[in-house]
Length: 131
Image (cartoon, rainbow, N blue to C red; front, side):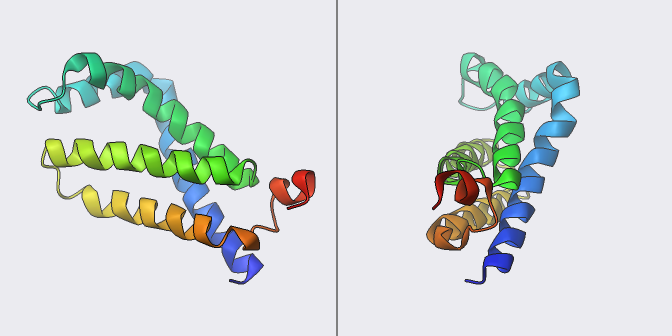
């Protein structure tokens, strides 16, 4: 994979995660209330949904920042896929089928980036760790 194409794909994923977290962080309580409301009729207990709803924007913002910078990329890709798997499971449990394709695309993009990580030359990882 071309190193510049890899950078562009990493930035696409990073900006998406970063943007999701950035807009949710200032309204964290409202976001949590919306999410717990969305899951109120699901089989998941509120005791799981509430902490996840507060952690999700922080995770999105952090993963996005790391992806944009190309720092700790391998961990960011893996963590991002785990977040997407949890979101996909939740989406299925509340039967929000419209959101599933977007989540799958995010997960697939992260997996693709992980697969071709040797092309991650335009990154802080490459500068700091000489990968």
